[in-house]
Structure formats: structure tokens, C-alpha cells
Length: 197
Image (cartoon, rainbow, N blue to C red; front, top):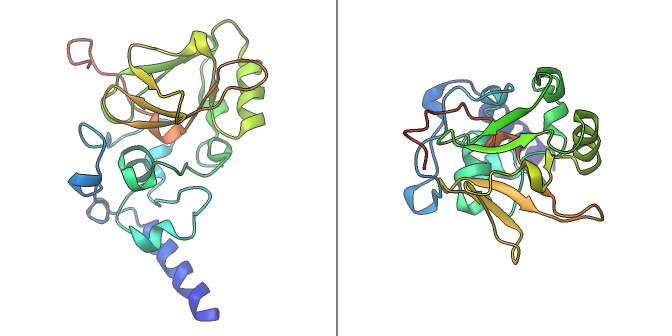
């Protein structure tokens, strides 16, 4: 038992390695994205090198130790049914709400940089934060979705971008349609309109 815990701890320590040589994308047959994850993601996400996925955060690094968090959650089809750790946006190295400007914030695809969500729209930033805090992942409503770039499968609940990036899940609640999204997949930098997919 102690040996198993030691192996897990060692794997997690190695998975947090900051070396770019350590990070490998998923194998081509498992890669759903149309390109590599951007190297400088916003909101502190680039600092997250460990490919921890919720709820099996302790197992993923043992199986696929060379993927960074955004690659595992956003591009690896083997992780499609998983998510980044719940409440990641509240982590001390992320602190999403301390980094948002007043007014409307646009979130971009972490691979191709297309706009995916903008908030707050038809509600306040406090309401967006309350919704996000209630569910544990950034939660968007219908008016906040760039529907030309966000593909929602209401049957499976899976949400992806037009670039093939897995974004999270569609999980309506008592308030109506809701997109529960992994921050690591919407922390990209914008690209010019000529390059948008």
C-alpha cells in the first residue's frame, strides 16, 4: 500500500515538471484538435503541466505522464469523459475572477484562438461568478455562446469547438441551457479574423 502511494506521489511530481521536452501531445489517432495547444495560455493555465483530470486525478499521470493538462482535457479523446479538476479556476495560481476585466470578457479556444464564449451577457459578472461557483467550472448561458464556433451535442452533452477542441459539457439546469466548460480549453489567445475556422 505504501509503495502504491509512493509511486503515485512520484508520478505526480514528475508530471508537474515544467520542461517543454516533457510535454507530448496525444498520439495522432487520439488527438481531436486541429493543431497544438497554444504555448502561452491565459489565466495561468500554461503553468499547469500536470495532466490531472477530474475525478481520476491520481490515475491519469500514471497512464499518460507526458501530456500537459490542456492537452489531456481538450485534445485527448481518451479523456473526453473527464474534466479538469473541479474549482480549478479558484486555485491560487489561477484565480480567474481576479484576472477578469470590468465589462465583457471573451474566452478563446486554447488551440486555434477562435472566440467561444463572452460574459457577462444579459446578466452581471456577479451572476456569472455565482453560476460558476455553484457548478465548479465556468458556466455560460445561451447569450454568451458563439454558436458559429461552439458545437453542442445535446444527446451526449459533449461540447467542442469548430477546431475539434473538447470544451466541456452541456448541462441545462433549472435556469435553462448551460455550458459547463473546462477553463484550460478556453484560455487561448485570439487570432486574427483571417485565420478563424
